[in-house]
Image 1: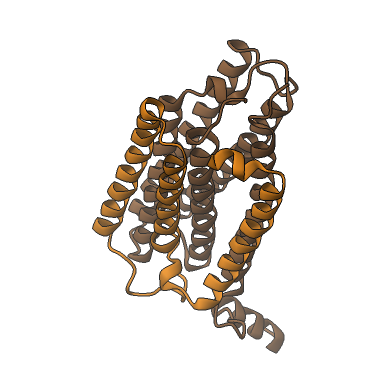
Image 2 (image 1 turned 90 degrees about the vertical axis):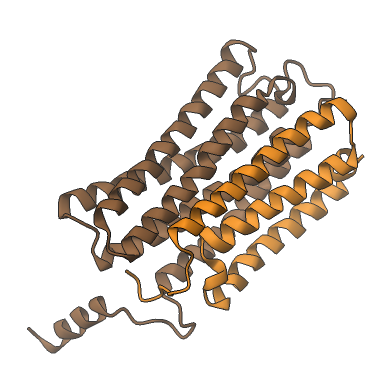
Length: 209
Length: 104
């Protein structure tokens, strides 16, 4: 093996930290998540701007929210953060079986949340005839919650990928341990965004003036 | 596991306790929604719900995302993004009168 190859292997096994003292992959994920505040902030602001503005035709989202149903969905997503952190904790103790179990539980809870969102959208469209183009309030609602749902779906795919890797390789290696941590950070972020959406969009909903 | 791992992270039992706290806060939020429907608490309702949401937000970020156990560099990046977004959209929504309408 050449000297360069030796260096590459050494770097792979002992990743260098940047001058910040933080693994650059983790730093990158935190910076990405930080930038997501601007993305979701724009969508939430857009919703607040149109959600109770009078004069639009058709049903407003705030008139048809099913708070008990959304509360259960919110609880499910909140608990998925618990199972995610338990997966991370199990891996830190090298409990591979526990890691797989909690990863799958997190993905399953995420899927339940997504199922709830599909049900909610279907109900709004079929029963209340509130489509994406019904009025700006409806558009803003579907855009915001739809993009959040897309984030959840991506998270579920990443969780199932990690779970599949763990099953195929008999566990998650040190290399993939950081991947689990990064996916975990992403997942928790999706949860905290929903904490804001649940309060601002659903619980603080104001009917049109 | 990553070399960033610290030994002072909460135990699984503590993670469960944190989840119970989060669940209770959510239950209070939902309860507040129905109390407000009956008694119309106005600004107080909005303030309390936002405080409860902020509490849940901080708990998840601090304990589940381990930010309180990480280097301050990460906190600074994360907090900067949040403050930037909150300030920017806060100003926009205030300028457009949305915040005033909801607060009242």
